[in-house]
Amino acid sequence: MHQSTQSELETKGLVFDIKKYAIHDGPGIRSTVFFKGCPLQCLWCHNPESWKAHIEIGLREGRCLGCGQCVEACPHEAVSLVENRPVTDVEKCVLCGRCVDVCLAGARQIIGREMAVNEVMAEVGRDVIFYDQSGGGGTFSGGEPLMQPDFLLALLNQCRALNIHTAVDTSCYAEPEIAESVAERADLFLCDLKHINNEMHERFTGVGNKLILENIRRISQADNKIVIRIPIIPGFNDNPENIEATGKFAASLTGVGRIDILPFNRGGMEKSARLMDEIKSMRIETPDEEQMSSIAQNLSKYVFEVNIGG
Image (cartoon, rainbow, N blue to C red):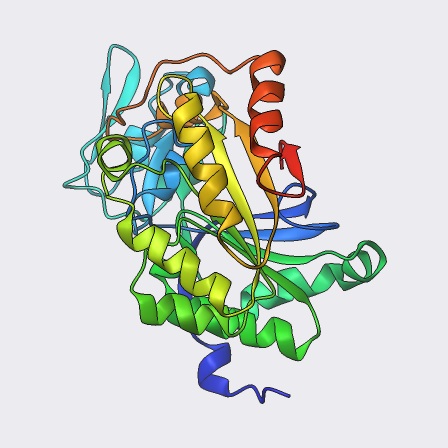
């Protein structure tokens, strides 16, 4: 059994959310820890607040009353009112949080917080009874959890010591040594595969997929259980050629028990409007049930089980 050390428990990482009672991030009832920071910038991203690997200020404009309390509270004169709406000068802002504290409408928020492993485990460990009853556990997502390997590995070690099932939801874009180290500790990988073509992958996510495909193969060869997750993005990866090629790739791996196809969710577009920096995103519609069923049928030729949704 892994022996915890004080330094491991005090290892810190950047998190932007912990979702309790999650049922789409692995088997059973789970606690999902969302890491902040991602090397990809997918144009359809559901969590654009995860892109930056540092804490940032967000604004829900629909809640803002234009009262100016945030302007008065800021000790660094980083906030000003323009047409009754607060504008933050990110060069002056030191993320002290005073503007958030005085916002009665809850319009301003700090996105991200530094947490130690023992703090995260205090949250995850509270729901062990639900994990035991449902076959659930802890899921580490993002952003990209492999961007914070020391933090992730320490959390996986702690979960293993407590007999908590673990899942890592990842793009698999990381140095091979990191992927291999995580593969030694995680029980399940949820591998997000955006597109099988390298050029298309780079055009729409900002990075190529060669390293991603290599790491998925490495994880598979380590006898890890894998779920391939494909976000279905109309006009990007929903064409029959890509679906066929993705199915063949999944079939070439060991340990892949299922493919999840996830219809594009417009929630990321609303979230991106809260961020101080403009986020480039695709303006597309969610695929309909008929298209999703057709894609699932095509993929079922290659893998035993195909799920629509998580």
